[in-house]
Image 1: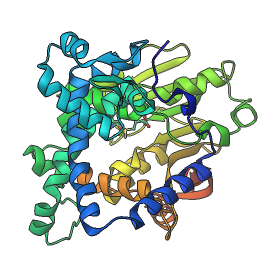
Image 2: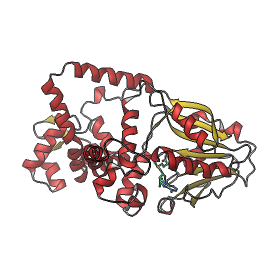
Image 3: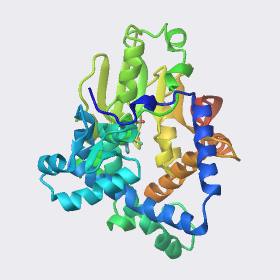
Image 4: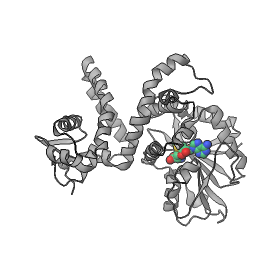
Length: 378
Ligand SMILES: C[S@@+](CC[C@H](N)C(=O)[O-])C[C@H]1O[C@@H](n2cnc3c(N)ncnc32)[C@H](O)[C@@H]1O
């Protein structure tokens, strides 16, 4: 059994997305209204240190060790197991306990808590490596980038990330050549988000008549196939082919999955699978500006048959009152790729320019606005 210090109250609060996120926001707001200007500055100061310190803890296997231990561990034991110098390690542990990432159970004694459990999760660990080594350096480059571009980014403008790594290359080709960092990105993609898109597409009804040799589901830019595997797991007997398409560097490392085919395909070239019942793009178009998104969409549109639908799985943002995470992700896309999260109006506009029409938006995460945007040919 894992030792978890605050085990009496350790149950994660289970609440639906709306209640959970509203409660978090109001509690954060309550804490912030008590801040003096100095408190605000200190909160931001500390915010700059948190990810690097978590990275340091991850590098020595600290969080996994605490989670796996049935009892709290002494500083001496942790230092011995991690081959670190106790006096300095003690300062790091004290910091991580003060910021609630681990728990201090006694003098020089530490255990896991809910945050520690999250940090020990390989998908979260990989995501934090992404934040540390890829996102933060690009964020740092943003103010200078904005000065240089005079805050304007016409099509073809490079992005702040390119300045941070000093490259002229685009994001995906650059990381395809760097497998370790690409694996951090793949971890990030594997973290479950709120809501489930599979709840809003009635495959059993809509795909029952697909013939076995027809493509049922083409997962364009599907990475290593997380969503296609989930589809097959939920509907193991659905007829038709399920095909994951991505660049060779991604599909070639995808673990095989029953009922799922992998195909190397560049979505800037004509779509080779004609007339599929569903084409699916999950968080693909938010990586691209308008010009490139239209190219990708036109390649799909040209392959669509009379009953084909394109399911775009992305945020469809309201024009007002966006959640901070959606706004954060929008700017993240700008910094990394000169791209964006789109509002409902922007989706209509983009799809129209690619000869497609937006038929329906089925939102499955009501705060983040993660949605299936159902699209057909004009
Ligand atoms: C943000 S990820 C989304 C992955 C997946 N759909 C998901 O939601 O987990 C974007 C994907 O687009 C792929 N990609 C980028 N450029 C591509 C291209 N030219 N052709 C095909 N796939 C590409 C990347 O390799 C990556 O897997």
